[in-house]
Length: 155
Length: 243
Image (cartoon, rainbow over all chains, first blue to last red; front, side, top):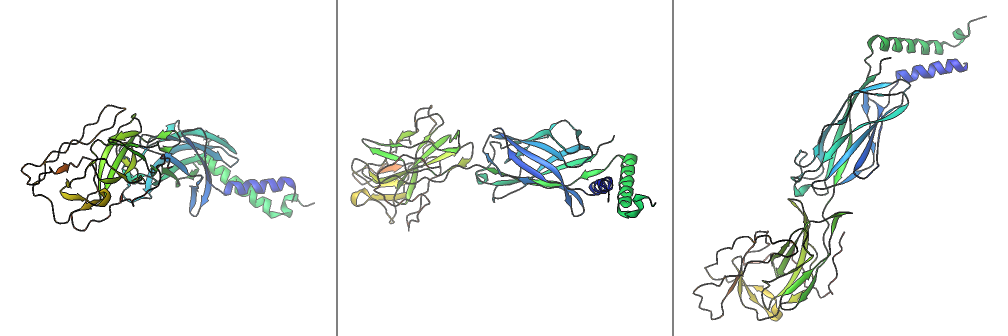
């Protein structure tokens, strides 16, 4: 097979396959970075999370979850939606409610275009622990789900 | 000569696939990448358990401790000092934010042997676990029988408090209001104990009031060990630095 033929095959395979993964790492104090990269799911596509633990919330504290989208493909993507939701906690008596941990609206401009094989910081989700948080939430681990919607960008 | 493409059908398939997908995209331009969620976790901090405070017994016991932090740069806001007499505990001081890390237990029962512990708090409802107890100290003066939350306590050997299971006087002084918070840089003592009227005992029975903060008291028969029950210790006082 000649080189140009192999390139065509590889491009076709890339177009036909999808994968997503997420990585999280801390940056500036108060900011936590979340990277969302496409990952293949069983019945389609999803976002996988690869993250270091985010910790250090206390009554009155606020953190920013800075979202970086990584596009591993050769084509551009347009991200049209980003949502977060509090799913569960690890401690009884600490309910996953806004009185214990508040996820504020995504702060960024949508839709946003992420070029092929590129990453882009698209905004952040403010996470705030209000003073109403109950005592049972000390040392609790809160699970947060982030959902992103994207489409291949038009030319 | 055969066309080079025909010798290997795979590139033809690859090209065809790419054209189909590319054509589809060009036609619809709505190719959904993801509609599912990813999850990650966020963990809350906690208030650490404090070490034993230092107690200096002069005319009245003075309790001192070191600051603790939830995180580097995030100190606890309030400190609650608990006095423990045998199985009974009471809040001796409630130190507000900005105050010095010490308090004077102005209403420590004379002649009794007691320990002190400190718990830190943060915000409206976060309370740290009861701290390690101080060394046991004996208050100056002569110990007399007293009521603590309706429980009669009598002095034993060396001022050791003994819960009298025979029951105390029927009348119990009305609870005084909760101690008001003082201005910063001062601690909040308990209100003075009123005397019981009409008691036949020539020595007036002191009644210690129960303040607003929770008190780990037990009924007269058989006392159970509250969480803050410390074993009497003779260790030398050490600054609190529990993190």
